[in-house]
Every structure is written in C-alpha cells, then in structure tokens.
View 1: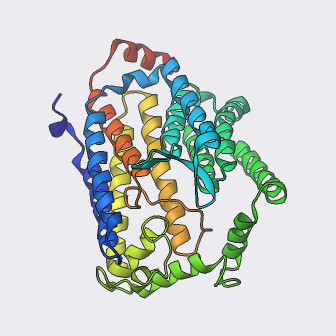
View 2: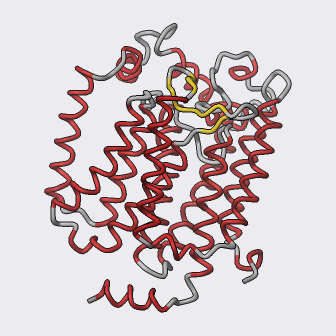
Length: 372
C-alpha cells in the first residue's frame, strides 16, 4: 500500500504547522536557541515515527492479549519510576537516559486509550450497567494513583479526564454521570484534606484568588495572562515578546508556550493557531466515523479526547481560566516524549484509516457479533 498517497495530509499537515508555530516562538527566545534546535530533531523523529506507524496494520491491537500486555507494561514503567526515576520540578516522572530523558506517562496514555477502546467496543451497548463503569474506572484508577504519587497531578488529572471522556462517548446514562460527579467531589475533598501537597493547594487557591499572591504562587499565572493580553491584535513580532525574552514568563517553551506565542503573534495569530487545532480535530473525527469496527472508532475518539483535554487545560491555564498544572500543548510544547507520542498516535490513526478499507475475515465476524 502506498503510504504517501493514502496519508491524510490535512491531519498530519495541521499537526506539523502547529509544531512550526512552537518553533517560531522558541527561535524568538533569548540565549542559544537550544530549545528550537532540539525540538527540530524531535519533530523529524516524530514524523519518521508517523510514517513507520502508518505502514503497519494495527488489526492486532484488538487482541485481548496485546491490550493486556500494553496495559501491564504501562503500569510497570510508571511504578519503576519510584525506584530509578529522576526528579524534575518536584515530580519523579522521568527516566534519565543520559543524552535525553523519557517520560513514560505519554506511552501510558496510549495504552489506556487502547484498553478503553477495547473494553467499550464490545460493551458500549451495556454501558447502562454500573459494573462496566466501575471496572473501566478501576483500570484508570491504577494509573491515576501511580501518577498522583510521583506526584504528577497534571498527568493524573488528564488520565481521569480521558476516562471520563471515553465513558461519555460510550453513552453513559445521566444518572450514572451524576453519581460519578458526586464521587469526584467527595474524592477531591478527601485529597485536599489528606493527600494534596502544599504547593498543589497553593495553585488551586491562586486559581480562585489569582491576585492574592502575585509574587509567589500566583506569579506564573499572572505573567502568563500579561503575556497573552500584551500581544494585542497583531502581536509584538517574532523575537519581540518581552515576557519571554526577559524571562518574566517561566517555562515559556513548555507549560506556557501558548502565552509566548500569543504575545508575539497576537489575536490574529492565535485564531490561526486555534483554526489549525480545529482542522486537526475535524480530520480525526472524520477518521473516527469511517472506522472499520467499533474498536477503531473508539480508539480515534480517544485520541481526539486526549489532544482536546491537553489543549483545553494548557490554554485554560495560560489565560487564567484553569489552575497551573504543567500540561504541554500537543505538538507545540518543547519535549521529545509527548511530541513523538503525538505523531505516533496520528500514524496509528492514519494506518487504521488505510487498512480499515481491507476487511479481514475475523473483522467480518467481529462486526457481525457486535450487531447481534
């Protein structure tokens, strides 16, 4: 099969333009531009992984044995962090491999999407039974607790939100949604009293009262909103973002890349960036609609949910609507693990789109079984 001819270029092209938008901001930072040069390498690696994944028939992902192995490996590497992981910004969430570091939470999210897609593809018509919500929630919770204990609260929230999104896509009854919401309120209350670290409480308090501690816990959020607002309509121009260049805006290559971009490109540039994300989500949803089986549809919708959750949380915290949690913006923030994982997910979606046109014998059987 000709991969280049069959590739969804609107999907991967929009992701690539988003990556270029991140590079444009990184090239404007002061210093030796090491972030930009390293990011170029990761984007090239990510694109290579995309085309490699696009050439593979991922029909085997539907096998229970494969799904189980992926999930167990994800839990194993997350647990291994407590023994040999490196601490960065207070979280023991990285494997230091010398020349570069790897964050296993990104592949773990992929494993969770595969697991939930497999689970709901056969049981979504029975989602009204509370048992399926509890079982799928237990799979999520094991990953959630390993992330929370690192502590990586941002990734833990994303894992929980990803599960919630896929449960909603599976068609959860409204009464069960209320039960989950009530359980969430109780859980957050218990976490606040017994589990949240002081800095996590400070971030939430700062979100409620952002101007209460500008020089302390609220500094990052305040500087981010200043950067976004100072961009105006047309922006200050590449390399002229004072919040980034003068180091007022911390982590401007990762957690606050959206604010750094908005300052230099303004409202017009920001709307174009959001349009690229809209095109990416539109193409993903179109690919989900054409899934060969329920598994492919749920998997692609899981990818949409993952990118969407990341984008909403990142942009929300950059404009002061959500607490600062350290969540990267897909394809745009600096970092190898999430960039390569993002392109790998697009490659798998692209492969499912291409090979889904070929109906396997066991696929016919599976499709008949779902409808019976």
